[in-house]
Image (cartoon, rainbow, N blue to C red; front, side):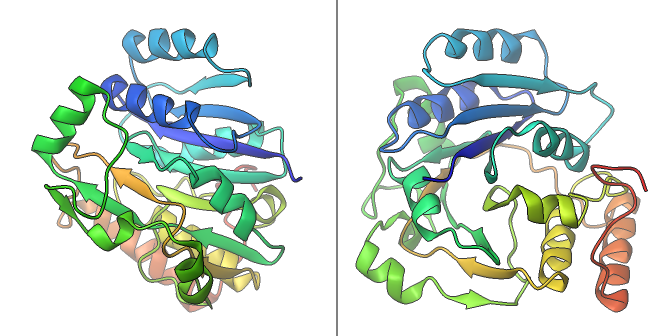
Length: 265
């Protein structure tokens, strides 16, 4: 079986990260290593990771960079470069995993594809309750959930509706998986993307330009997205506008490789 690395991107959410770790511990198929890609968290996150390093039977690595604002492309690249194994599953540190999340990604992986998962959105009230009481199980009938169809795990439906496409719309790097060699071929995420927005879409477009197709995982690889309070989206910020401009340049020029990525071209 192909060995895999699970990358968890986090920033100052040790309460959410604890719940994510607990959901990984009960996976039907554990990853072969975990890398926590930390975009500048403090000592509480470091202490939590150290605590869970002794609870897992697999390596749990902590890769940290100084907090200089939202630089998720940079920390993801550091984690991809450090990954020991050929298949990479990437989530954000506020995605609680269904017990068959890792197994689903491994079962659907194929050469020439990257996989895009989908999330059920947990509201603020249920997030607080889940964190306080270590709630890991949610269902279609749970209250305070949006996109509840994304709570359904059913392999029969998954095989029917998990379709292959070349569409980049709806791309979310908080629940994806890909081959490390493909990420290296496009030079990872473009670190010129600073602040929230579009770095994940642009990464996907370069994979598509490399002829790596997208498969949407439906009714499997279920992830529950914890509420993170104040939203970091700012569609009017200069950073966001620059990111949109960079995205459009990639689309227009059909770029495959970025210059400021894992390697600095």
